[in-house]
Image (tube, rainbow, N blue to C red; front, side, top):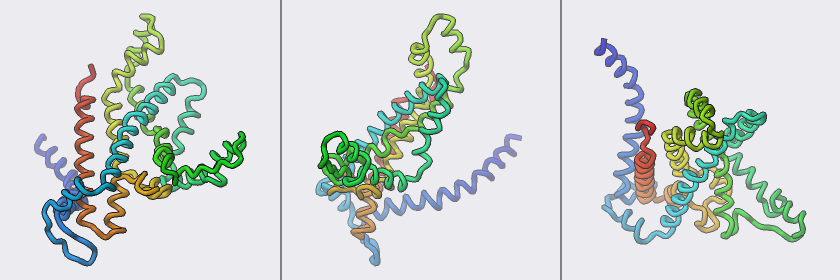
Length: 291
């Protein structure tokens, strides 16, 4: 029976493994190999050793800025974003009269495409007719015309705010984990006189370690592929103020026609992602039993 089951398991897994090898594994090997070459459209790759990586770390201010922005966004997304989602989940778990309405409304930004969200914020923060500037002008500053996305002092903050508060996916995952906690634990705590605040801090939060760690990984790694909203709002500008690694890869490959160099940035991005995931797994001890 065991051998028969192994045969079925192998049979059903085979298509997935083949697709993974063709779509991902081969692509990663090609990406890694061509990162050591000088390669542009219409020309064959020419091996140049570590030249791309040396330039990357010693003589590329745009890369350093892109890496810094990406790192800051990963940090914000994996801390503030997850914290917002967790707090909101605990509040909704109390099931007050507004909880179904609030859960539905909070999910709206996550079901709208990134391009649509980008256009929404472009309109809302427009220096001439945007809602934010109009409100400021309404309350006394008639000449106020802040260009939020194209001003060096506000561009990074403006782009960050287009996604940071909308942690509905984290909220849904946390709510599902809370629902899996045995109700008997809550009842025992209430019988012993524990308040709802103490139940949240001493029962619910400690039992959410695995799922919070998973949400940190999901939120952080989502910033390693964030591109659509940035392209719609600033395109990485002004200058390189809001450029991240995916935008830098896009510009280097498709706008500067330098595929070999962009692939070296891609290899770095993959390595950065792997290090982040491993650190989070160890920090939250994901997969280990709850203590």
